[in-house]
Structures are given as structure tokens and as C-alpha cells.
Length: 309
Image (cartoon, rainbow, N blue to C red; front, side):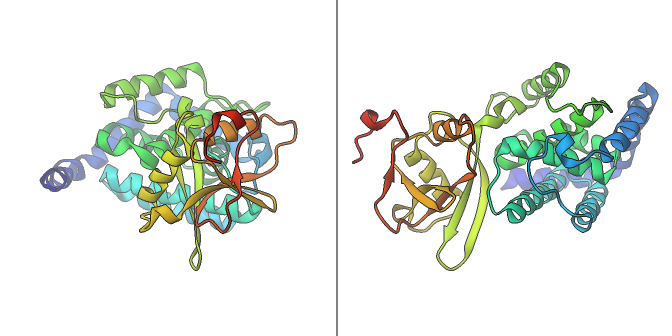
């Protein structure tokens, strides 16, 4: 607690008076290198593209929502605390996720989010966001880079990188090797371990909805490694969603009109990968809720590996 108070005091004493100077220096550096002008031009090009041309596979936010997001970014620019900036970025990203899911009636994974965030940043048309992202990446406490905050900050960097490397004839949908190298260098410099999320780790994220009987659904993007079992994921869900009686909850795979409870020793990421590999994958999502029956789902090929039944 003392460290938190001390850090906030240091931010107020040091960062607050230096904020405008830091931002001006970053902008001057970009202008001198020509990258600012290039970013402005690429933002204009990307803004003219349809969502599908940027790899978006969902209904994009309407103009009212884009303006709301843009207003939040303007508010973020006025903040000097990198922690508060990331908190607001987190809210923006969750708003985008909510729009995606409400418009389609399905859940989207982390691999669907980067193109949508790229589209939203292009529509906001704010080159200043590039320096905002750099400000957060360099000044945020490394311990706060874990979890959703670090994931969305990395996503924002990746989205802005796609815009920087945008080509009029064909939108860049994959991060360049230069961008990946920059991210790897940042991770090595800003943290002593490899638990901070990278763009290469997007497949290690899973979107899980938490369903309560009377309060509807909420969802979170969780770090889920390939060999994390359903039982372990349920423990994580209980912690993240602050469930009082975790023993009464289970993880379900929901596809169209079916809802199947997953066995404790199955692997959600393997199930996700198997569904994505199908020629015509159906919309699906994982839901953490109270079981209403005992129908247990075991993915094909794992019947002999499970002892739950």
C-alpha cells in the first residue's frame, strides 16, 4: 500500500509538471523523422477503408460510438498518470468488445479484436494516440502490465503499428517483423519475466462470459495457456469474477442452440483451436455458469484421456 501511495505522489510531483514537455519532445522527434506526417497520411487512408478491408469480422461501431470513444481518448490525453490512462484505455477496449458482441449476438476472441481496434483508431483519426501509447508503455509500472491492462496496451501498439505500415492497395493485417522485434525489446527492457503479454501470445487469450441467474452476462479476456485445463480455468474464473461459491459453477461451450459442460480435464484452448480448424466453424463461446444438467462434453479424440465420466 505504501508503494502505491509513494508512486502516486511521485507521478504528481514529477510526471504532472513534465507531461507537456515529454509529449512535446515525442511529437517533435516524430516530426523531425517524418514519421508524424506519414502517420497522418496513413490514418487518412485507413479511415477511408471499409471494416472488412482491415480484416474486421464483426459489425463495426457506429458514428455515435466512434465519437464517444474519441472523446474518451481526448480525456486520456489530459491525464498525466500512466495508470489512469491505461484504465481509460481498458474501458475503451471493453466498450469495443461490447459493441462487437451486442451487434452479433456472439462472443469474439482476442484474434478478432486487433483488426477492430485498428479500424476504430483509424476512424478516430488521432495521430496523438501514438505518443500516448508510447507514454504508457514506457512509464507504466511493470507490475501493472499483467492481465488485461497489458494485453490491451499491447493491442493498441499493434493496431497503431498496422496503421503506420498501411498500404493503400492492401491493408496490412499482420504485424511486421520490425514491430514484433520492437515489442520483444520493450518486454525485455520493461520486465524481468515473460508473463507480460505480447502480440505473439494472442492465441493464449480466451474470452469467457460469466452468467448469473438474475444479472445477465459479463465477459473478461483471460490469459489461458494451451495446456490449462478446464478445472484450472474455472478456478481462474472464480477469482476474476469474484464468485462466492465456485464449486457450484462450471465451464460450458455454447454453440448455436447447444450448451455443453466441459469435463474438468479437457483443454479449452485445444477445443477453441479444433473449432477454428473446421472448414465452416460455427460461432461459439465459453460461458462460466451454474450447471443445469450433467451433460459433459469431451472433445473428439480425448475420450480415452478423460476419467471424469
